[in-house]
Image (cartoon, rainbow, N blue to C red):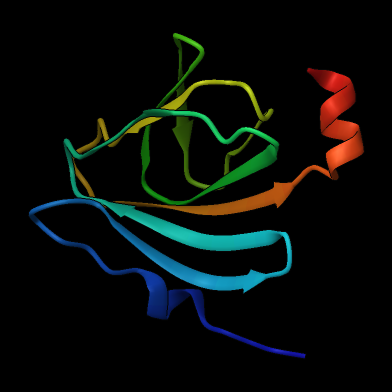
Length: 113
């Protein structure tokens, strides 16, 4: 068993958003993204990966395949491997997102292409 404090991964920077890795085990990665007001995560994809996002603190706007979705603290979002994902902290407060990336086994991913 391994225990870590999320509080230790809440690290904000006025210059750019921060990414703090909590776990990287096998085919899974867990990290926290921290944003000051107005900071953005550019649109991108995670091919072959399921993405789970928990709004730990604050609020903001996800843009998934061109559709804006406002999220608040404790909201959860799931995106599939081929969805285009972006985020912006549209609030006046810092915000943090708990992110879990899980690789899809190769044979399952190949069937979905």
